[in-house]
Amino acid sequence: MNKRAVVLTSGGLDSCVALAIAAEEHDLALLHVNYGQRTEQRELKAFHALADHFCVEDRLVVSMEHLKTIGGSSLTNPSIPLPKTDLRRSGIPSSYVPFRNANMLSVAVSWAEVLKAQAIIVGAVEEDSSGYPDCRREFFDAFEHAIETGTDGNTHISIVTPIIRFSKAQIVQEGLGLNAPFALTWSCYKNEDVACGECDSCALRLRGFQIAGVEDPIPYATRPNYASA
Amino acid sequence: MNKRAVVLTSGGLDSCVALAIAAEEHDLALLHVNYGQRTEQRELKAFHALADHFCVEDRLVVSMEHLKTIGGSSLTNPSIPLPKTDLRRSGIPSSYVPFRNANMLSVAVSWAEVLKAQAIIVGAVEEDSSGYPDCRREFFDAFEHAIETGTDGNTHISIVTPIIRFSKAQIVQEGLGLNAPFALTWSCYKNEDVACGECDSCALRLRGFQIAGVEDPIPYATRPNYASA
Image (cartoon, rainbow over all chains, first blue to last red; front, side):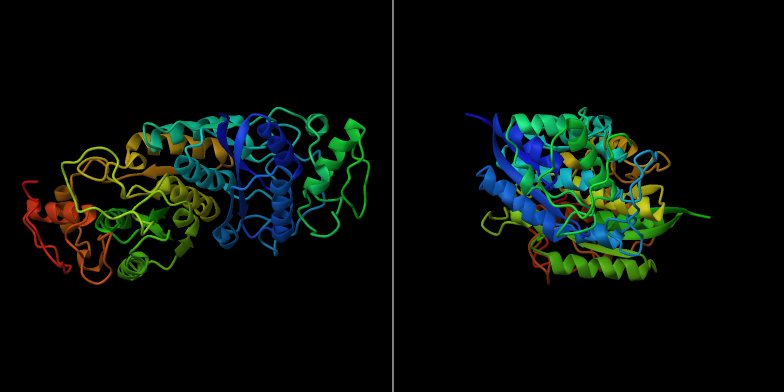
């Protein structure tokens, strides 16, 4: 029997590839979180499209409106402008949603404990990516220890981050090798119809496809060349 | 200036005493979580009564309906019977809500990071209590480390558990010394009008008052003597 795993599935490029990797060896249950982000509806649509593609019945969609209420991020607070990308900027970007991944992982653990799943799979990426502190493996290691101490002694759940050391170009290559359905995904922070091509998330994604030498199949309002950025 | 702290305030005896201790030295922000538990409305009423008593304006009430959806607990699933208490039983009771405290702490950290609070105060009790794995100091230590690794480098939030080593009788004594408003609290897992006196939570509470030699001011349907249980 395959191991059972809960996959955090935002509906973006990274979670799509993590899902394609996970589908090779696990029985899947997919978790999606709405947290009042600007493109909530579009991401939810991508989530269900991916779940359909991978024929996963077990789906849990959770609403975390409190992350919008709490604010502190340009992703959930319309009065904080969403900046145009600057891939050379360092530090934590304004789109950081405070401790978002811990909120999502906690739900995933509650569900995994009831499902008796042994793994939570997360498409987090540490380098060449967001600068979010809760996307580092160090954080996932610490959270894994919190799971071990905070659940039933018979419960052992690991946090698997299969692409955490990949560059975006490597993620694209990995996805191609697994026939990951890139066309079903959504990454733009700003728009829900045609990706803007100018926010951090679009820029990182486009750069990954450009370096990999592959056309990104989703529609963009503009496709700047980020390959040398 | 006082340190700013977020207090997890369920509205029960333990959180009331933790709140009374916290109020001595902190500017407070109070977090309450509805998670589809049987006595949700009564606990919310107790929360606001306590917040009024301590004159705290900053209140955040969060709905975690997903914990009910996920289930796995007699507290949130009406088809799992809520057992009569057996204070000599060991192991994890059916009222355990999988990884509930991590879900609540994650929200508290998100809020604390935006408020620039330095502490999260939790009225968790390790001994003479619930048998919940996520009420042990070992878990809070692990979670504190997850906070340190998963937030901005300038953010340092400690999890303070002022009554974690107390017995229920000591909690009652501590609360008396601080004039904690016991009459405003609610602990029963089963009823919302008159406490049943027979669930685990009522039994632990009544035993605490009985050993402390003090009358519990809230109404009970029955008050068995648990002092020697």
